[in-house]
Length: 230
Image 1 (tube, rainbow, N blue to C red):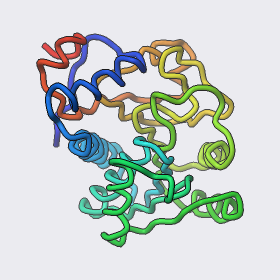
Image 2 (cartoon, rainbow, N blue to C red):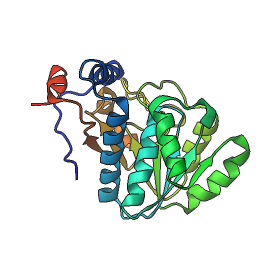
Image 3 (tube, rainbow, N blue to C red):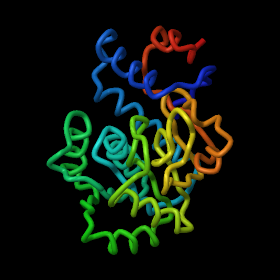
Image 4 (cartoon, rainbow, N blue to C red):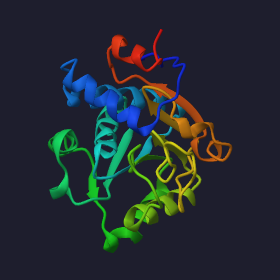
C-alpha cells in the first residue's frame, strides 16, 4: 500500500491549485499521472477502512469525479464491486476526467448517468450500498451544493452505509471549514497531498470523520516549498 504522508502544514485551495499546476508545468508530470496516483491511493485507503463490497461512487463532472473513476477501477481490481454514478453530462467532461471516464466505459465498469429524472432510482441504489464514496465536488467548490448533487448528498447522508469523501466532503469549504447545506457527512476523508486549512474548524470534523492523507506522487522538492515534506 502507498504510505500516507505526514504533512506539517495544511493547504488552502489556492495552494492546492498551485501544487497541481507546478507539478505539471515545472516538473513535467502529466496530470493523468497525478490523478492515477490519487485515485489508486484513495482506493487503498478505502479498502483498508472498510470490508464493504457494494460500493457506490458518486462522481461530479470535474477532476474530483475523475478521481472517482480511477478509484472505481482500482477497487474492482481489489475484488470489490464499485458502481459509478455520474451526476453530470458526460458530453461536458474534459481533460483527465474525460480520459478516465472513457477508460471506465471501455473497462465495462458499472456506470450510470444520473439526472433529475433518475434521482428516485439513485435513492434506492444508495440505500442498498454498503459504502458510498463522495467524488462530487473538489477543493475549488464553494457555496451550497445544488441540483442533483445536493439531492445525492442528502440521500447518501440518510443511509447507514460507510461514507467516504475524496479530498474533502462535498459542501465543506476548503478554506473556512464551513459546511454548506447540504454537506456530505463522511466517516473517512481521503485528502490529497496534505490536510486542508478548513479541516481545523471546530465544525468540520463532524463532516470529515477520520482523515487520511494520500500522496499524488508530486516531487518532494515541490512539496518542501509548501512545508508538506521533510
